[in-house]
Image (tube, rainbow, N blue to C red):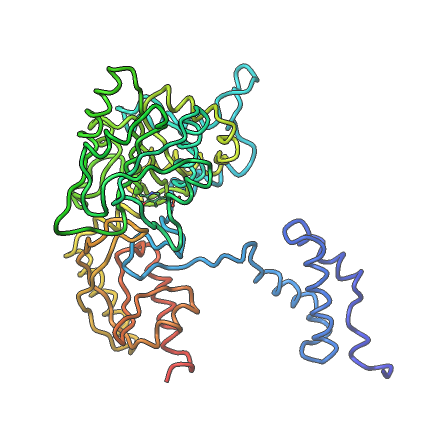
Length: 446
Ligand SMILES: *Cc1c(COP(=O)(O)O)cnc(C)c1O
């Protein structure tokens, strides 16, 4: 190194760390030091000038994201896409998450300074949303709600048998079989009926003093057609009502899956909590992040004594939700239409108009596209067989991978990359347009 070697002008680490002290609270000292070392190395190879080391460090750190999770645009037409996080939260829910991220009165009474019921505001919102529910509870997810119910109401009460129809013993997610989950807690599943036909007498002959509950699971991801018969909640409730009069109280739990709280005319075959409770179910369990459009959670609604037994179960502590979930769930329940509801109910004519306008903007940019009919879907393992008539912008299929690199997930099928705006918030259209423009102008495309 000679006297005028520019490398002599590279600032020393301690000087840089002092100059960059303002970045330490956000990134931590280790990350700042690593970025400094990296920038110094780049200056040594003359990639950057010695005078630019500090700026280069700042640029590196500014591009550093606090989470490895990448924000995506859902242009698939699948409203609840399991692999990209199911429901997108409403703006009210997002705001609530920020509020709850500090210290909040999640389990604290400000007036008395004493401990209060955890998440009480959210649970009130749930009961207001479903007035026929005497009580409500929120746990980690739908699967947790089922585990808690079968453990607290079955195994813990010395009644370890859960009666289920064979036609409802199903796999609900990739390799996830509900009955196996329940059996892992010490429950014995008593299967009644056959795959395609189950009758009330099948249930009544299986119910004994060892029965903890009768579980009715909504077949949320498949349909059975043809020579079939099932026993609906109303019929099961009257059967169990008869047994109750004779001194055997076996609760009926309906797992509706989707989290619809009231009847949705667009999805006539999806059960909702209000109707199922009105039909006589003692308890309903559902997910928070499917059709309800909220955060991941498991909802339990129904009879006070049963909900209270579940709440007092030691397992409830392990399945409880945190303040962030309570906040987002309450905001979802009390706020305006969720992105899920808006995507589900989007009017086809408006969607077509929106898509045509969008396609025009692309053509103005020299991107040739066609607007084609598209079958959108509810997704998230819900409303099987329901097609939501939609439209999409058709692009060559290799755009699919290129768009993913820019955070846009599309429906790649039959040699085409289809961009469906149904589940894209209108406020995100500019982001989508920018991503499409970037791909169009990228050299990676042939
Ligand atoms: C989705 C689903 C579950 C599981 O709910 P998670 O919130 O995903 O744990 C249970 N039962 C049914 C019928 C479902 O559709």
